[in-house]
Image (cartoon, rainbow, N blue to C red; front, side, top):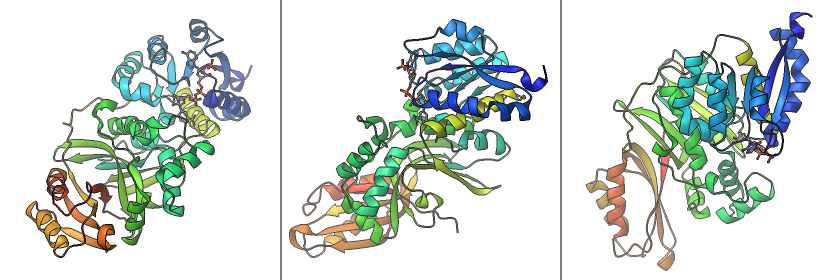
Length: 410
Ligand SMILES: NC(=O)c1ccc[n+]([C@@H]2O[C@H](COP(=O)([O-])OP(=O)(O)OC[C@H]3O[C@@H](n4cnc5c(N)ncnc54)[C@H](OP(=O)(O)O)[C@@H]3O)[C@@H](O)[C@H]2O)c1
């Protein structure tokens, strides 16, 4: 037998959208991989809820791929695989964002690889680039559009002016959103992915529950229309950045100016922008989900695991997590159409040290409203001003607030 014929046995846990596509892709590419790597990958067993036995699959495999989702039994199978001295590849963001430290330690103890490229941004190679290509760079900030469902909805709202509800319905009809879209539209899914990216980029353990997240359910077609007049487009942004010796990790809807690399990422695409003084910025973008796309990222991890040396994230640092940080903001206020209204709003903002960058004033009588963009200011100061503005007699409903990312790279 030639070395190209020697098998590399891959056990597959889960055979749904991604698992089935992974098996198909591996079988299609096995010959080409064998020619390059010198080992021929083959499926040694498949586990679903109705077939297969984990212990048997583990025994007959050199590497286990987990494509089931959920925490248990995925965590138990991951730990058993790593403890047995076998590599483990997963697409499971919940598992890695909740139990990453336990899994990294188990992989390191056993001297085997734990890979999870497909857990964040599908086929976009953010994990590999942050963990390997940029291992020597001092990363200052990672910004991501890491949820394709919300990006599809926001893009539809911006292109056609439809309401959030109509855009969500369209996303569901086209299969971009689940029947229950809660995880996506509340920002929870993106928070899990940002916890993983932050751990890799900054070497600090970040649990998904430590990531404050806001979703897109409150966004109105009106906000988007006003913002367009101000040259802004709306994205659900995951952000992880060094601030004052600490680390801020958050998910929130934010307006971007056209020059920002993430402003042009539309539809269900994902993208990650990495900023470091040594490299300025790198933006990676591509499909964030889909069976064959995700399977491609998983197979890439399998091939990497077939070729030593092992990859494990650097030992943990412990940067303190920061929650109050500077940002520019958009604010929309419905007001009575009285003289001096803008002056009073401006005075309150000024008292809190918030300066106005631009204002759009529209409507008359009971339809009067202000849309404003502020220069960057500490969030706590801006929220204090918004609270005071919301109590003014002439303000007809609570002000709506969305962050604005002011930087561009041109
Ligand atoms: N779909 C995507 O585009 C995408 C993108 C990126 C990452 N991911 C991640 O990839 C993973 C799989 O997603 P998917 O969309 O392929 O899911 P899916 O279509 O629901 O398939 C899940 C598979 O896992 C099996 N399974 C679930 N619980 C099990 C258990 N306790 N024991 C044994 N088998 C079990 C199911 O078995 P049955 O067949 O018996 O039900 C099914 O075959 C998830 O972690 C997901 O977050 C998916």
